[in-house]
Length: 302
Image 1 (cartoon, rainbow, N blue to C red):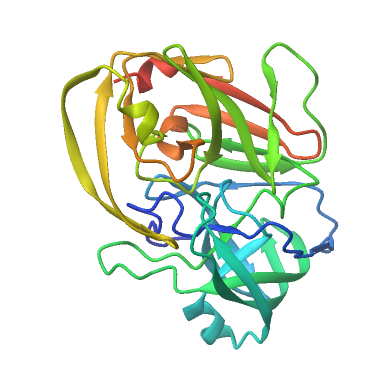
Image 2: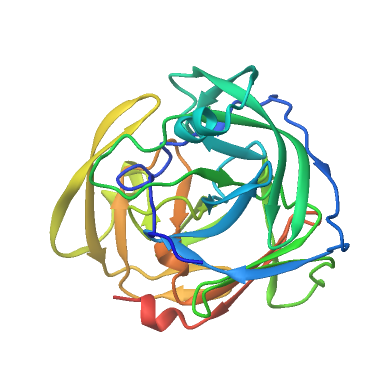
């Protein structure tokens, strides 16, 4: 199955935004025939975001990114909504982590999403145009951890494989408990001597570690910082800067030496993007809010 790699979330570490707190979107799982309780499918890279092929209402395949930084169950690009004739079912409020500038987003009812033979039915998905930039490849939609909340979800970036299977991660030294923010994993990130909350956001392709300006300005940069562009969120537009720092970054038992950081983050929490995970396998256990990160951080240090 061939298709172009796609990405919408470049220079937008949360353009897609989270659905506002309290938004209730439901999903009903229905096993395909023959019954499927897991899947293992090739990982496509939509820029640096993991992506898979998805059948929507029995049609496709279409390219959907896997965005651990998004809430709700799924998102569908407005062009796909028109192509499939999906009916508007309501609306939700879209926000970014700053909590500013909420805006209404239409929702559509999707009869089925099928990934590697595993079928999810009766899904309400937010929709808008996720392909505004002509310079960026196309993406048809977004899948979230909430959709796969009954499964162990493994993103093997090195092996280019995505797996979902029944089970749970054990309580073990190499397994970290995280806090769920509407389905988004929140972990403790240490930058030098500072510790702060950080969202693991595979939909963020702009930088490995996106930090609040208040922290970034205290770090020891190696060489000049560069302006990498401007990003637009639902609350406005901002200049994005990046540079390598002397401080070591640590999370989930891994160390990143002299890493590159990007700022500003939206809000006071940091953001761990897909670029930080490029040499790792990360397994999420949404039911127990646990994760395991395995790989070699040394290759991501510089």
